[in-house]
Length: 280
Image: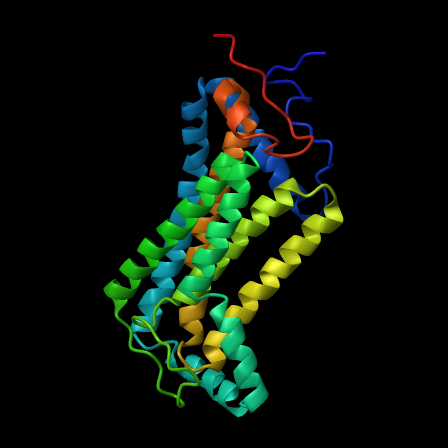
């Protein structure tokens, strides 16, 4: 049976793709097949695939710029303050303690420790590109968030006294929200990609989403961010996480074009396809 780039068996997985994301997976692998048929070489193919990530970021940037324009003009201020007033009424000593613990999951020291431990495990288990992905996603998110905070320089909210003393730079966008979706979203992608069953993949994503949402909630409850800050952090964090995820997926798909990748990145996905090498 043929296993060339045009073959139906070329990108077939042992774990069927199904559920509500099936159309997105189908679109993804149609694009990979098209690139495989028209672009030669490992790095060229991966680079062509990353263009899709750039498109995603451009779309997110348009939405972000629209939101930022409305935020800086004060259009969201009423809704922002109304939600924060609701958070103020929720106040309770035990909830204060919970929020402080949850928000720590998005703090720099904690996320750097998570990235360090996870990358050491990935490196020693021969998932070198996956480890590199974690560092690229984290470092990139830090630069992007800092640049945006400096550019917009939005003051922190003063709707009610903050329930924490640890506050960083400007308010917009939320660094905790952006970092959480980049780090925990990327980790969920890497873990779910290697999980042997659909149940484990779903649990992985469910836990990651729960942690991300709770971190966003904690920033509002503590009074140190407006809801629009958190939403903007989620939007840009998701865009950056997507482009990083697309990069590792392209490496997985085209890895047979560069034999050293197959050796270095062992079992990118259990049972996943290995594209046949280029005739050249």
